[in-house]
Image (cartoon, rainbow, N blue to C red; front, side, top):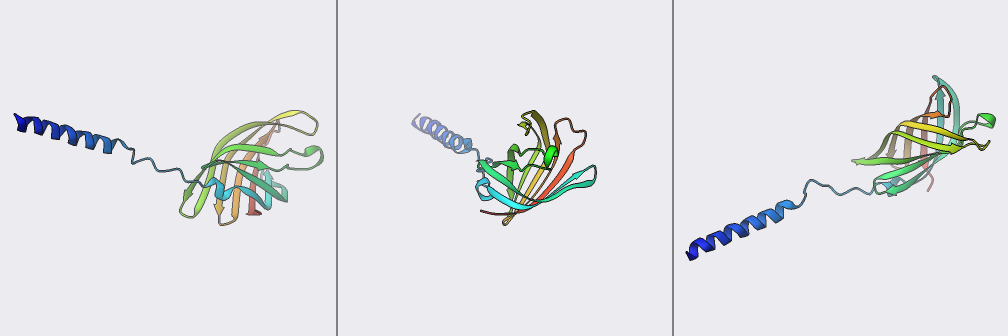
Length: 163
């Protein structure tokens, strides 16, 4: 009887130890804190294409701000000039992933509103956001639909980190 009781206790102890050790989620990898590595101001060349024609080719500064360890917000500087100026825009919640030495950011669509120089509120949609970081350089591509404009602006920015 003592052996049967001892064996029952041993099986219960082994089951408890195995249960506790297997309850931990070994599949969850810790979030890599990449946003702090890429946050900052980037100065470089911005090319805006409208209907396959180059509309703008200027030196601009993009600002990327850390939101979480794995996401950033992007401030796009104003585009155009005079009455055709699109005010500075923000794109929030761009997710980041690190693969080897490369950090990539992607966002399918972001919808926002901004007030223009006339005080009018305009809706905008930024889509197909792709950001690629390498060393101190960045390449950003996205499509922009602003207000009721009938066309989409395809934008490419290539810059170098200032700070």
